[in-house]
Length: 166
Length: 307
Image (cartoon, rainbow over all chains, first blue to last red):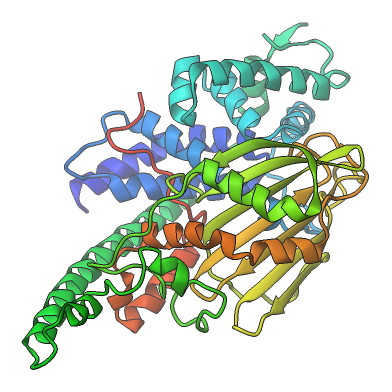
């Protein structure tokens, strides 16, 4: 196995759980999250080992994932076909209620709102970093964050009354 | 106990345990396909260039053929600067390749289109329906990762909704049994019109008043023009009208309007500058790879990475 392949596998193994959780929060769906992570890893792998090295693979993968998510969502729900079967649950019981409540709240938001909240609050990214990842201005990110928080508060108000969205 | 959003997200995801091995293997497999795809494109591009040069030389060298017109034809510069658009017109050929109208080496590259143009064209095709209070909500040119698109807020009957239009490279892929609310019609030129006409939440897990029409015209050149009509100004937002602003017939007419020719040409020109000379065997292999590749649009940021 080539050295850069070994490096990639090491990177992917270490980073996949985090990428998956980010993808899961953004998409709200286990299988879409898996698809998003694989697509992200595929795109990172495709440029891995080039002469122009990826200096910060974590940040690069995060950017690829976010843009892939937004791009796929922009193609809209025509690709979301209804299904009579729920995806199999692969959760531990303990946090199911909290998770479902949060996912319901996030699912009510437009894709970019979801992305901005996940990046700001789950990834702990700064406004400037989120702006770079999403290809938007800092002002637009601030506005979107405030609006998304207000929407999420509206969506979760009764479900998580103690949630401080700050 | 007061919690902040960060803690809630952390708690909600800490017990998620994906299959890392499977995801990594899947990622590598997709990456290998992407690399191979890129290499084939590079080789095909080089081959196409050589072929074009030989073509020009051969034409110039033939007795009586050394005219400017002959050279132009051989090098593919015939036609107008929007040759791609013309080739991508209503009577396009049956689906054999998704690259019929893609400009090859030496052909004039179609101009990219801007988000402003997309918004103007969308307003133009909606003009016969006399909407009020039109407002551009979103727009993007052909340099964007998802292809050129525009979304307009439209007012009608004292209410408001939205219309989005997106031009992208996407070939029609027949599927088996269609889910509810979906239908597909094959048009005379071999193109396909896929229609969704139903609730925005077909699975019943959202606002039952939210309606959606989506008409996608899968052209024979491998591009698709897609229009979505909602009775909500924002997708997944609150319902802002009882009915939709357009009918399926009106949306079908709008997606097939020649006003999108320049956007189609720009999409075709942008993505595969040298596909026409790919051997058919390789071409079908490429299509299979692309179809197997999950989310299609290349949204990789430029290297070096962000930050």
